[in-house]
Length: 524
Image (cartoon, rainbow, N blue to C red; front, side, top):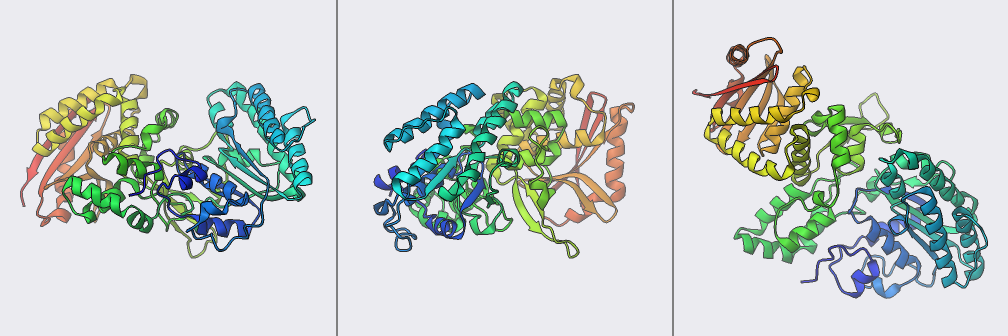
């Protein structure tokens, strides 16, 4: 089996050392033959750098690297261009002063490799001068590839003093591309966010934003077909280790790591998680653990937006472009960073504009993000939530209501007083988050012919129907009885009769900061 390219972002290195490569050159060929200036947004560790590196080697005319790939006999390899690859992760940007100095150093280094001396004082001037001089020296138009175009802005988000100067620097730098257009063959910019694009690209020719374009939906990431074809040996090896069939492994991998989509039709796997899964042969939060979700979790907690993790949310097509750097909505921030993805796209009969439905892409993101949000709300360390989750799951499965109630009370007691919001929606969301974290298949606000069930969840051979009551002034025992009376009066259990599962009824009452819960078995 070919070695797995975990962490390999250089196309040349990947091909020379014969790592496993999922061929994306069909999409690359479409890209370079259809336009000139492009922008692509994808979450971190999603193959953007490898894509930029592939374009770099292609335009340099390194034909041997592409032998056996789709594009090999479809590209004119006599056409070779000077390539400027700018990766902001390799340029110091702790401050506007630092990025100015280090960008000048970086550009001067490239110029020296072509025996060019740059005379301009500032980075933007050196950038324009270098492009023009490369054109004059080689007689060929220049290719500009910008990886992590938004990294300096994202790193400055929590340092407001540097945000405005950093934005001003990048605006001036990218504006250069408009003035040197006649010297350019191809421009490709990629990064995590689209919200930075709105302000940073205001001075340059507008790039073709292919982020949501169905033609390039699989340009980064692996499709289901690619996974099963390219990783067949690894799937079989994993299946042998687990003593199950290949089909079972394929389904588990799909549930854990597939689901990312930008058009609502094509879904792909996160490459980083997929590669680590087959290397370690362990289902875990491989991608999630490589980045800090603290900023996102704090935003969810601050804005009380936990419901975004429980139910699909809608966004209009123009909503994706209405980004305000200083006040981006939580759902769009979650989408940009890969924690929400496009589940479907539809157009109403009387509407021309698409509307997108966003949701959590897969099990890896769902489990990890909800665990971190619950940890933040309850101020319980993430390292402790695993034991807490297993304990409460056993209690619910075994019908140990008193034990479950003790743990619920303990978790509510951890929530700082100022975070308690006296409204039903807050407690419904929080309890549904906990149930999700416990690993149950949870449905909230389930409609029936005469009402809505607050929550229904399934676990092995059991279905639990729950009603959640909140009242700051009532006694918790009275609220519990009110919840059971509502369940029986509206016969919420009728829709689940005959399911061959045990049915339990649960009442959860929150009275101030006091919690009471009771569960009863229901017999048909």
